[in-house]
Image (cartoon, rainbow, N blue to C red; front, top):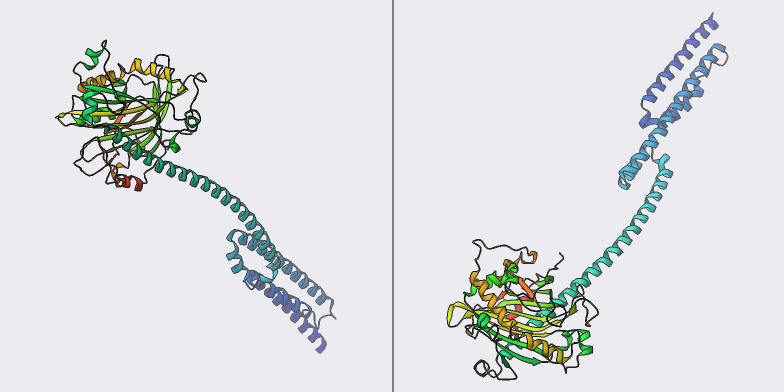
Length: 491
């Protein structure tokens, strides 16, 4: 009885022990995410003890086997959960980056299992970073190369700007010297002085074009007076300095006040009204708000085939209100030309140098006085005799016709009630510079056509000197040198 009682007491003990371990298993499984490793080791230590003192009973052995199977299944579930967690953490590390990886790997429950995986991830990230850095290096090199080209382009533009501003100053001094040769009285009174010869309007058109004698024209043949560095390479090769080209000096009175004349001449729509020798024209490059490089084309004149011209033009305002426009022939890579007659439909000509002084008539403030200098080379390699023949044929008509048409058109001109705003992107910032004027300027000439309808010219302080005697001091142009408003025509 005692033994029986002992076995009966032992069996329930074994059964309750297995049940207790099952409950522990359930609890441990529920804790699985954070306690997986601890639960597995506790199951392994408890499993052998489950059958201690019960091996002599077959029923107890069956109960022990069932408990072990339950433990094995629970352990398998725990391991699957752990693998799933490791996979999830690995994906999370890939998305969160290195900082999240370091914080996640510090988790005490999974750091040991993930050491190898983290090492592989770090290696992959390092290789990926190296590839990205290599790609960025190529991009940096490309951008640096592009930046270098842009820098070179800007340096060339700045060099061209300063060279052309120097050209403007040189041309104005050149004009002052020509206008002061032997005094105006001698030139205008006798037609002599330093080689100037007065040209009379042709009898056939004198009554129509110069009936009141308001236009006077003088002619002088001169070599190219530009500085050697400003002369085209092609001209340096063909012109040894022995060739002489025609230079016109004109004085004309317009029967309208200065403001009206400037407004009319600055409007590009009015150019064909007084200059019939225009086939086409355009701006090539804007240098500053008061200067540009232009291109124009003129039709055939007598036996001289059509010509095109590339010319630098600039304007400013003197202290007494005189508008000064200067020009000089130049080259530009965007408009190459044909230099030899017969090699193309249009041959390149050169408006070597020129200056226009537009001011109030000193004898009548309701009238305007225009003084013009124009030195040109028709180009194409024409021999001296051919140039002389052509010039003598047209000089008795065209200058007088030019000023007659201008005067007649200005007298009929009706200024708009509201000033027209022309599309000139380079004029949008004229008001930024305190020395720039918003007064319109421009003219359409033989060899160049330039317009600044919205202004932009530098304006010097008032002086008492004569309007056609430009000031030579460099400080007049100082503000032009300090101005950074250079722009591309294409932009």
